[in-house]
Image (cartoon, rainbow, N blue to C red; front, side, top):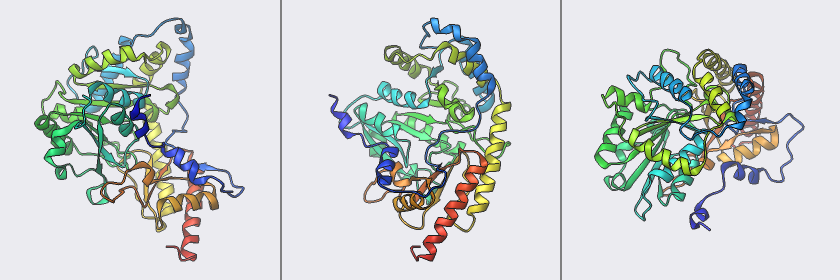
Length: 401
């Protein structure tokens, strides 16, 4: 058995089940704000594309993907991020969602050794940690605190850490805070990658869930293009249809960037055996080629955030994020006790921030926060907000906060 498996921690939702064990919530309809699974309707034309091509079940898909999909991705990325060129032959690979791709990527690029580090934000998407450990590296967690806008203070990272770093995971817009890294910050990271010779893997799966139509979040490849770095050296991005198009069950996304890195990643994936079914590739082609449903999706989230934040105003220390569909709320009591009490009294589930982060030098940057995923319909999210408000008021009345 691979001994690195012993280093893996329980997934946050396993911890949540243990936290709620034995509790008897009231007879209210359960509202789950804990899991970031989009609940808006999937585009009908995507399902139709799958059914129209169901005969492709008789064909083996190729790992590299069909040209139609890679060309559609290239067109979308170039338009969305102002790229002059993204070669669909060498700089794009379709993947079965960003989760499997992020994990597999670390197995490809990390050179296992006692000194190898994989750096990531803290709090973080737990795949980053598991990918690092199973690649034979040590995770190095970079705190994301309110004092730095919930983005790591990269300037405070020591030269020793950067020298040992082989792979840096970033997430922009961030999970769980929704914080967006600026183009200037991305360029600073590119300079560090050049100086210390590490790879940047930018998880941008929330990039299309933003509030200002005139200011979409910048991406890592966009920062490269602004630097004239059109070979995207040391830079790779991960995108998904799960959040953008409400298609989490399609398991479809892509990786793009440095052609030399993607050549090795393709080799790994060929042996890994993770090719996307052809009918899903054709459906993905249709999804990447349409922006109307994406704009409509953002409109739904804008309305939802406005309504929920109005209800929670003055109740919790929380504000609208830069992007994504999460609220990162500071709790008046410990995050685990808050989540436990909210479930027990109001049958609403939120995720404790400490389950999404690790303690480093006695400090857990996720503690005293909870993540709320506003993925359900507006009415249900508003109901949840009213219940949260009632729960917080009960804490005040009991003198708990």
